[in-house]
Structure formats: C-alpha cells, structure tokens
Image 1: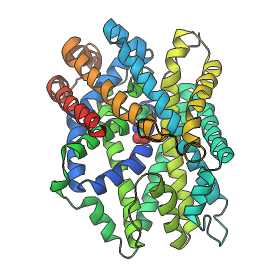
Image 2: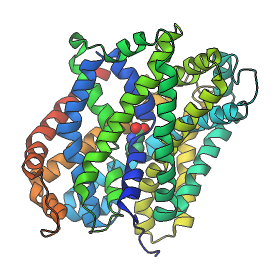
Image 3: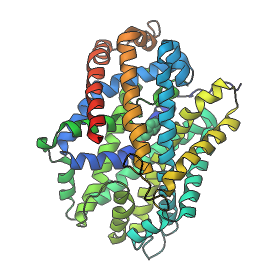
Image 4: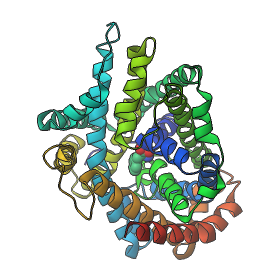
Length: 447
Ligand code: PHE
C-alpha cells in the first residue's frame, strides 16, 4: 500500500478544508436562501447554528479523523463498532453529492471557457443567456462532455495526492477565489441602485423565521461546512499530531460563513441594480448573472472573473468529495491512488448521467416528485448529512464522551483546548437536540 499522505503545513490544511467547505453551497445556496427567508434574521440564526452546532462538530470531525488516521468508516468503527454505519452513510452521501455536483461543475466549466475566450471580444460572450442555457443543458452530448471534463479535472488533482494535489491546488485556488470575490463585489456595489440588493440580503424580517426556514438554515450549514459526510474526518486524518486543531476549527467555519455572505454582496446588488428578479437555483447563476454581465461595461471580463471563482470553489469541493469517496476503498483494498481514483470517479460519473440528462431527455422523469438533481441533493444533503451530523454528536456526546475528543485535541498536554467546557456542553446537549428537531422538520416538510 502507498504511504498515507499528510498535509505539509497548517496553512495548506486550512486552505484545503476551506476549499472543501466553500462551494456552490456558499456562492449560490446561501445568498438566495438568506434573501428569501428573512435576510439578516436568517443570517443571525445561521450564525447561531454555526456557533452552537457547526463549530463543535467541526472539532469532532477533525479529532476523529486525526486520531484514527484512516478513512471515515474505519474511524467510526474504531470509536465504537456499532457506529461504523455512520461512515457508510457518509460515504453514500458523498457519492450522491458528487453525482450532482459534477454536473453543475461541468456547467461552470462551460461558462468559464465561454467568458475566457471572449474577454477581448466586443460582443457579449453569451448574448441570449436563457436560450444559451436551455440549449446547452438539453443537448445530451454537451451535457455529458462537460460532466466528464469536470470529473477529469477533479481526478487529475486528487491523483496527485494530499500534498501535491489537494494541498498545492487549494493553496492557489482559495486566495485567488477571495481576491476575485472582492473584485466582483466592488463592481456590484458601485452600480447605481445597488442598495436595493443589499436591502434584500440584509433587511431583517423576523416574521419569516418559521420552523421550515430554520430547518433550511441548519441543513444549509451542514452542507456548506461539509459536516456529516466525513469530509473533515478524512482531511483530519491527514494531519500530524503536531498540529493544533483548535484554531483551524474556528477559522474554517468563519471563512466559510464570510464567503457565503460576501457571495450575497457580490450577487444581489447587481441583480437589483439592473432591475432583475432574484431567482432561485440554476437560473440565478446561469441566466440572471450572464444577463447582468451583458449590461456591464467590460462584462465579459467580469463574467470570466466570476465564473473562474465559482469554478475554483466547485473544484476545491469536488476534490474533497472524490477523496472522501475513494479513501475507504483505497485503504480497504490496499489499492494505489492511480488505480482507485479513476474507478471511483467513473462510477460517480455514471451516477451523474441521469442528473446531466435530467434537463434534456430525462426531463419528465420524476422520482418521489423530484428530478434527479433534487433527488440526489435531498437524499445526500438533507437526509444523510443531517443524519450523519446527529449520529456524530450523539456518539461523541453520549457514547464515547467528549473527553475522548478533548484528549485528542490536547495531545497529552501539548496544546491547551481553551473552549473545552463550551465544547462538551454544546456537543452533549445543544447539538443533538437541535439537529433532531430540524431533522424531523425537514423530513415532514417534504411529505
Ligand atoms: N461544502 C460544499 C459546498 O458548500 C459541499 C460539500 C459537501 C463538500 C460535503 C464536501 C462534502 O458546496
């Protein structure tokens, strides 16, 4: 078997974890959900969830991973044999999530290339956004080709291993992402009429805080922080015992949340300044935004900057997803990276085919009333990740006890875990109870 990889620096580890966390969930899910669900009221609830549930769970995942130094299925098994299934559900979640993520990633590649090749052209890169989007997603060959291109990009990075693939690429992609985000924000908020967008995003409306929007905030938080599917366990397993995990578990949720809020500030002022409607889902990113770039001076350049940043965000998440999906198989069957990564990627690409075709030939196929994209998202994100987070909180809070994690954090006194008491209390009482309530709410809201 190959030597187990390891992150070579704390900076690299943090960049990779942030890379896993910041993705389409932040750039696209969060701003829209916040705008529609009470603005600042939603953001406030989200922040409270991050502090009470996300932060302690992030500590758990990093610690579980580093202690076990193995894939998530083995890691849960080592803590308690009966909990190995949490690693299994996490792995299944990751297959489904990457199944739809790679389709969306493929679209992003398409748009990035389109804008990149039009930077110096005076004509708009995508002059009729709605027709462009509809015709390319419903063209089966194109939809599949871009799915494959995105997956190949992901494979190339992950095959490079932890140090040379994931760590190196994240160290470049994350700083560039934040830099590009700032450029887009400056452009967006300086457009005349931008205030209305900021109002949409931030104006607090507490009447919109219903049980269902709170449920949405919690599952959005799990997805955005990549919690409950073993992502941070897997990345934590490549950490050395000389690293102090405490600061990372604060920095990662903080920067992830910052990116989500910044994404809203980048997108909505422009939407409102140009008198467009804030729409949901694919059409916001792939139809509304191109329409905005069309009306902007140097729109092709801004379009390129925007889609390049979305591409980096999606790639740094998809490499995490592919690494998590493969790590069990790599270790269990003692296979080389070069062999197993392309096999797992091929299986996930096949899983992605119905999603890719779901906007064309399979457009009318519905399972439980949902198209394939929504179906994968529902099972992977809402059901399995929420379940994984609940089971992990219960396992650490009540079965193995918080001390196990605290000992792993402190490494026999080498490090001081300042938030010990806070951690024990939240992981034992607050997190499991909150997650349980929300899980019941989100399941019942569908039926
Ligand atoms: N956090 C990523 C996003 O916001 C998605 C993700 C989920 C990544 C689970 C890894 C694991 O888009």
